[in-house]
Structures are given as C-alpha cells and as structure tokens.
Amino acid sequence: MEVEVRLEQGREEPKVVILAGEETEEVRRLVEQLGKLRLDPVPVRRREERLLLPQETFLRFYTDGKGVSAQTGTETFTVPLRLYELEERLDQGRFVRISNGEIINLDRVTAVDLSLSGTIRMTLNGSVYAYVSRRYVKKIKETLMRAGREKR
Amino acid sequence: MTEERKKSMARILIGGILGTLVGLVLVPYVMYSRECPPLAVLACAALGGMAGLATQPFADSGRALLLRSAGHFILTAAFFALLVVELDITLDWTGVLFWEGLLALLYLLIWLGRWIGWYLEVKRLRELLGLSPGPSPLKWRETLPYLPFVLLLCTAAPLALRSIERAMGTDIPALTGIVYPMLILPVASFCVGLSLGKRRGLCPLFPVACFVCYLLVVFVLYNSSALFHCFLTAVPALGGNLLGLCLRRVRPTGG
Image (cartoon, rainbow over all chains, first blue to last red; front, side, top):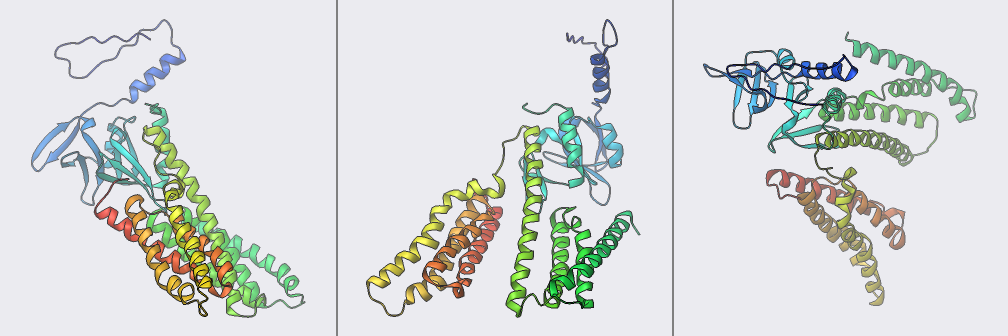
C-alpha cells in the first residue's frame, strides 16, 4: 500500500482520503481502523485554567470520588467529563479501561506483576501503579491484539 | 437481591440437594449400618452447598479473593469435621486434623491451578505489551540459587552434627536434639529467608523446600514425633522472606 502525506497550511484536523480501484475487504478494514482513531486533545483543568493536552501526554485517567482525574508524568489534572465519555473520545488502540474506575495508556506500561492472591498490577512510567480488574483482562488482551502490539 | 446473589443461592440450593442425595446413599454404606445419622446428612447437604459455591472465592482478586476463600474454607472445614466425626472415620482429634489437612491440601491445589491460569494471562499481557517475561512461576527459578543453602542447613548440617555426636560418644544428643532444631535452625532459616526476600521478594517455594528437606532428616535421625521440627524451619523461613519483602518495598535493592 502506498502512503502519501500532504501538508496543508491552516488545516487543524487531519483528513484521510483512500484511493482504491474497488471496495475490497482490505479497504473496508482500513476505513474501520482509521475510523477508530481518535486523536483529539483532551480538555483538562488545572485550578481555574482550562487546557487542551494531547492524548499521549497522559499516563492514566481515574475516578477519585470527586470526579475524573488525569495523571501525566509530572502532574494531575481534573477532567470535566465522565469516564465513559472520556473512553469514547480516547484512541482505542492506545487507551484501555482496566477497571470500573480507571483507563490507562498502554504505551506507558513498563511492568506487569501478579501477586499470590491474583492481583494484577501495572506499572506506568516506572513509578505509577494501576490495578487491573480481572473482568477487564480479556478486553485488554483483545485491544492489544487488535492494535497488533505483539513483538513491537 | 442482586443477580450474582441469586445465582449463588441457586448454586447453594442445587449443591445442597445433590449433597443430601449423596449423603442418604453413601452414609449408611460408609457406616456399615442401616441407620443414617441426621447430622451426617446435614453435613453432606452443607458440603454440597459449599461445593456449589466453590468457584466463587476465585472469581475476584486481591483482598476480596482472600476473604472469600478464607470464609469458604472455614465453613467447609467445619462441615467436613462434622461429617468425619459423625461417620466415625477417626477416633480422636488428631485424626480429624489429618482429614482437615487433606482438605487444606485440596484447597491449595485448586488455588495453585487458578494461580497458574492467572500467571499465563499475565505472561500473555507482557508479550502483547512487548515487556520482558517477568519472574518464573512461583519464582522457582529465583529460589533455585538458595537450594544449596537449604540442603546444607536442613539436611547436611544435622546429619553431619549427629555423626560428630556419635563419633564423640555423646550419650544425650543435645546438639541435634535441642540446640540445632530449636535455636540454630530457626534463626538460620529466618536469615536465609530474609536475604532471599530482600533480593527477590516473596518466594513461596522457599519455606516449602525447607520443610521438605528437613522432613528427610526427621525420618533418618528422629521419628514421626519430631515432625513439628519441619515447622521450626518452614515458619521462620516464611517469616524472614516476608520481612525481606517488606524491606525490599521500603528500600528496593533491585534484582
């Protein structure tokens, strides 16, 4: 498949046009995959300040009783969205829900550990811990396989 | 009532009915009698109910799993003890303890089976994430370098000390009978466990190895009355390993 990138000054959102001789299964899969890509920045708050940060900045999003928080490598922000709304907005090949109250960035996972009592702990960026609910393990594996992450 | 609770109740009910039927058929057969003690049938029904719930303790993870498993085991052990007593399978409490030990072993095997399943899931996750494979199952490979210490401490040292005592013509083997198993062995097991815990974290096979290696010595040097010596090495080994794990968490040393 030939890939071409054309830069257009002033364009804010990227647009993808697929040129094909006929509509094959491969083209349909490509459209489906591209359709799932969500690259919009995430709206967050730091006290009174409102910011739009790129998705790859974040390690995780989690509920903390008051609302949804977003953690980067250096600070934590408040997110004015519910976790399920956020899940719909995030890139589904990169972010995955690991429990009822937490979504993590799979690109930032540096270790996965298992305790004797079956608790699965993911380490993000080497120092932030996230605990995986067993009910979500299958979904995480499916997400990883769909994104073709094996033997990166 | 939640959907999960309804399912649990249905499982208990079905298990209880099947347990009652099994009890009515098997209890007279086991007792070589036409009588069927109601308490024995009640124990069978309760055990059937607990068997119906057997997958529930492992449905979750972490604290919930530990609490559910402990609760399930305590109740099952109580009904099982009642059945053992009612069926006159054993004459004294040590016999009941023996049967309870077998039940605990069964639990341990089920847990081990589940844990291997979880381990494979985590291994797959690591592969998909492109991470290093992680520790071996139950950290057996990490425990292996400590096996020579265990063999020296729990097998070679007591045998060598007994040979020395014999060579010296000692009447009372105080060293291998009291000093070594009561003092040296627990302290040394604790220290080795501590070292392993600090380096590698919790290694559950280490206390098991201590127990098994000393078991050989018990039957060579002593007799079955000294079986408790095995716990004098396994329990401090586990304690040291857990303390080492705590120290590792406070001040990681790598490895």
